[in-house]
Length: 395
Image (cartoon, rainbow, N blue to C red; front, side, top):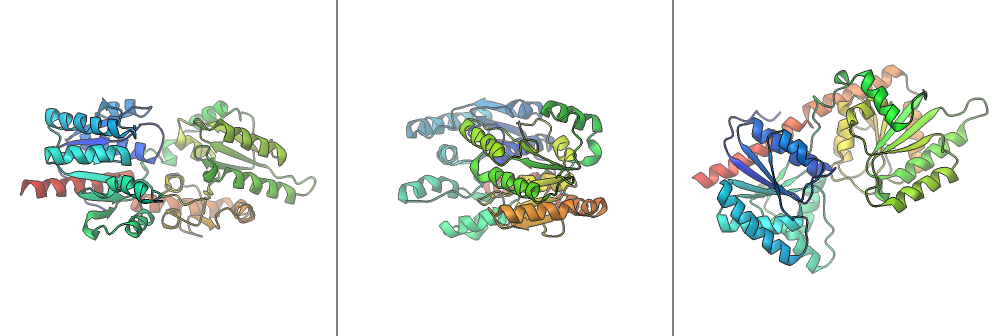
């Protein structure tokens, strides 16, 4: 475990395009809260989003700025805006979480002579010299944080970054929020009512959290459910409900395609699209099993950690961050990416387990989340990076 931080009386500016749902946005909120709790001041420059109010409730301050823009002219303007903000507010360190704002933050840090930190929340595609140059803003920091060993290895493959500038700080779950003991049956019942599942009492409940986008594996999950249904015999039909928990954002065509596939495969009574969820701990509490069958590697994949924290077994694709976060056979099962048959078999194997054996998988997941992947450990490690860089600047 990372030692707890001592008093932290610094002003930190985080820069992120938007503050909607996502791992980078949630990390921004968690770090802002940790800074304030440690005695510091947390500023966040962003276009805004639904997490902005939560940051303000935690004691952070939102600065409305068009840092989401990739326009070279706006990036230059944002560099000036950030420089002015740093000087007026007495910012000690700036931390960028995306490429376009990282260029603005880099220029502002150089102008004001303060430390600059970036976090890779995923590995970027580097096709062609222009793209590589654009991506390089993230590599020009005094410290580059990778959210998993998988991400760190991807960074090392595309750059000659010095090992001392690259730090692996895994994302984490708030184990106090994601705690089965803290989620009442009333919350679960209210959630299922909102989902339109009131009255259903399926023998086996499966949850796939994640926005509706092709690489999250929704189609694979539909095919797996269809395979399980086809294996059941008359009078012994499959009693299972699969919930896709996540919105389509602007990709409504993909949502329509999923609904069409559900009808085509004859599983409309088993698969439900419920949109965004405001109470994810209750969603995990509802489930017997959680899926993360992404068809391309997750840089980290917080679903596995949140599911584990809620003592739920997880089935995930065997690539990316899942190889680090899921203990195959101990907290869940890893399967070949894109393999609907393997997913169906894995679901069946956990379904066939006794409740006691599933409980053991969940308890193992909770133990790993608590010891390795807690949000508090992530925050402590990040604040320690800040303190180390600021101490160097004071020498």
